[in-house]
Length: 117
Image 1 (cartoon, rainbow, N blue to C red):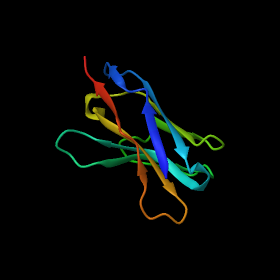
Image 2: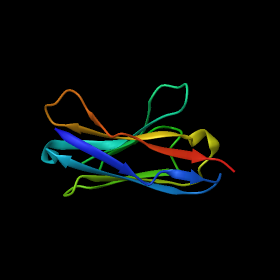
Image 3: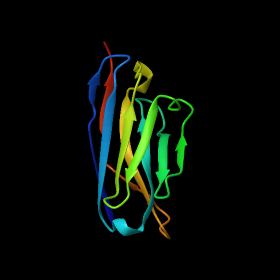
């Protein structure tokens, strides 16, 4: 089992920045991918960015050039630096982790990000 705890959400003005953090606990040695998804009101959960323990990244088109995902492998902590935020980025952001040989990913409880003036 893997538990994920997010932090760093909040209210920010358009054009501002936030940094989300996620810490994994439990069977973390088998994690090979971590990242972030988000879900806005009335919409489906969507990919924001993922990163492998080898450093390979995958970004949604909406995140490219504005967001940066990073990982601290030894501790299995993942971060999302978000710059140039706009109201369309308002959503609950969920931490995500996938383990080797485990079909179902693990999810955090989510952290709210609100971009508004």
